[in-house]
Image (cartoon, rainbow, N blue to C red):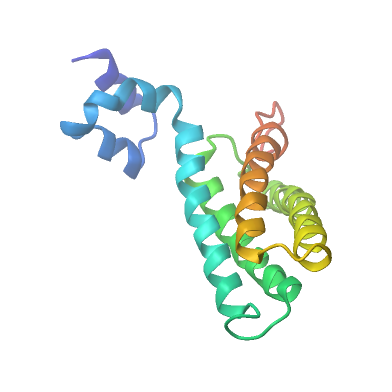
Length: 167
């Protein structure tokens, strides 16, 4: 049995590991294993961004007529909920197991997202509200910064390795 097959059997496998074990995808096995958390973070980050954008544009001034900041706030809540579940389930190996640990983790995750929400709101306030730039262009530019900041916060603070039992 190959070492990679032994590793897959001893490690907890998920749907993405099983997909990568298919013959066609075995070509990408080494980079997938090496960068799995980043690749899955980007994959779910794109989906989170889609959730955020769909809600934002459905509620925004051009569709439902809500103020850009109200639409962005509702979109943010939807995106954070989606991101926490997907990051905890598939992206980061380290996560809390106890009830108190999960509450602490969820609050930490939300706190990090509040920080990047403030960053995004500042971008919208300055460039859309005050300087009258196009909201779509600014939303896209802000999203890139938010994705990078969210990964760093999640990796280094929220889902970091902990020596404490139950985290």
